[in-house]
View: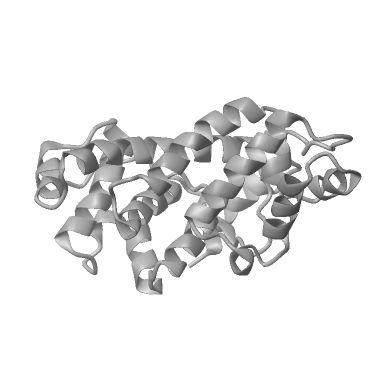
Length: 239
């Protein structure tokens, strides 16, 4: 694999996480007196995304799933308004811009539900871009997704090591290499494309850069807004 050079940060993952999460959120989570229709639609989409990645109560370790379902069943009751104010910070923060958040998330939902990549291939790509971007929320979230899909601690360590790993197959190592190339050069090299082409069809080859771009954008707003981690998400310490 071609080794690409990127600017080295002197920050440790612990320092990075403190810098991203150590201060108060830059945009305060919204407080609701009533639930507008665009927020209800946002919850509906959020529910679909979580169902697509099987983000159930065991993953969240709280009652968020049940709260969302109750709000959707009776969105305009006073009880639903009260419950909406207990939803995770990411939902209440993005409620300031529900239309854009829902539109952007719909691309992610398509990739999760109708994507042509296998779950393992998808998560290898997402985890690698999350690690390169040192995105605590995205990394911690998708470590949990990957673990439910059967990733071992060694698999997670391989993602962190990147294309230099010697524990993954040639194809999976090329997935990590492709992410690095997209991150550094905004394109996949001919050599890496050729390796991926031996296993992927045209649809998969076209889908992959969109997937990585989608989750790079997610990391941008999660980091920049300094969104808190929900219970169970260990951020950059997750393995």
